[in-house]
Length: 217
Image 1 (cartoon, rainbow, N blue to C red):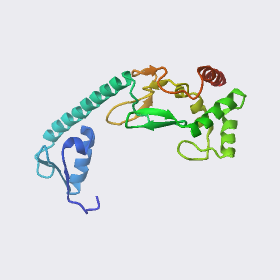
Image 2 (image 1 turned 45 degrees about the vertical axis):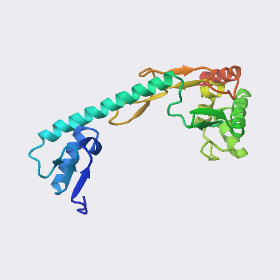
Image 3 (image 1 turned 60 degrees about the vertical axis):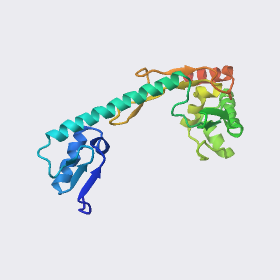
Image 4 (image 1 turned 120 degrees about the vertical axis):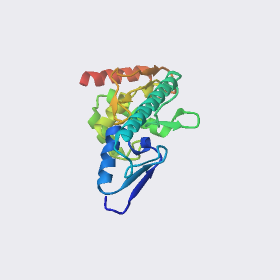
């Protein structure tokens, strides 16, 4: 927009923008500045083309292609989840993720922190108190921070992975255009697998703690 570039060369319309409205918006904006956009696959130069009808049609086709690809990817991910494969999981406190075989194993040093959190909650300490204790003890989060929030503690307590189970499909992508991810409250399929990996907390302990969290809420 500063005039440093006079042409943008892109592989295809689908690589330029994800929907028809954005394509037209930015093509028009650039055209007003005398900047051409050249789409290689469609062989279109926006400064020399006659009218916008062809661009609108091709943009619509490109948008549909993106949506079709997204639907196929979503279908493939669901099939993986049905087979028990981990999808979108990169590890959590107490567990290490191994991308080569897509498995998780207990990280014993971190697991002690998880057991401490569950033990203190059963003893009557609340999430904010436990968070402060963890901070005072110098324990680190999975990301290496010594700052603990109450929501982090409660999130660990409610995580079914610590009893050896796994729930996949907790969130979903609203659409391929905005790519917004939302919590899944039944809009998409979910897959719950029991005894998926080695537990850190017993089922009895987990149930007792989660019941206490539910009662607090």
